[in-house]
Length: 161
Image 1: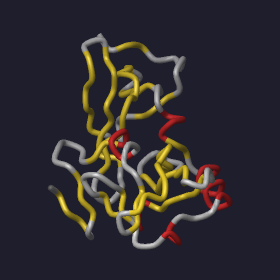
Image 2: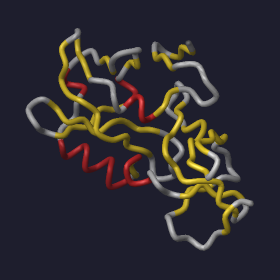
Image 3: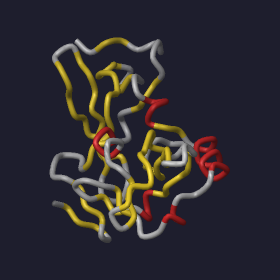
């Protein structure tokens, strides 16, 4: 396990999978408060800011990544007050992006399509370390660096040969 400021990630090239995080319940002292339904990213698609959480009262709230501890079976928070109301959720999603909005985008290097985005791998500090893309040969994990861009489906790029 990689540990950083109390956070844990699973071993691997890029850290912890966004898909995996979205399957974990949000809990305080073992009590489930809700489930993440999306991952909120910054505008540049370089860092996870937090989660859109569907709470047990059917309201959607924002959970900043910085206040959550990623455990094997939960996203642990110290207080239910860490879940910010819908206005803050709207604030972050309007100024950034979401994983759901990017899923299916093409990963491109030098105008060559590398594959279609299916997952993000996050480092312990929330930065996007790598992309998991679907290719004709199956899934592939790519380092997410300056020469790799995410582009909307249908963009004018050629498929990798």
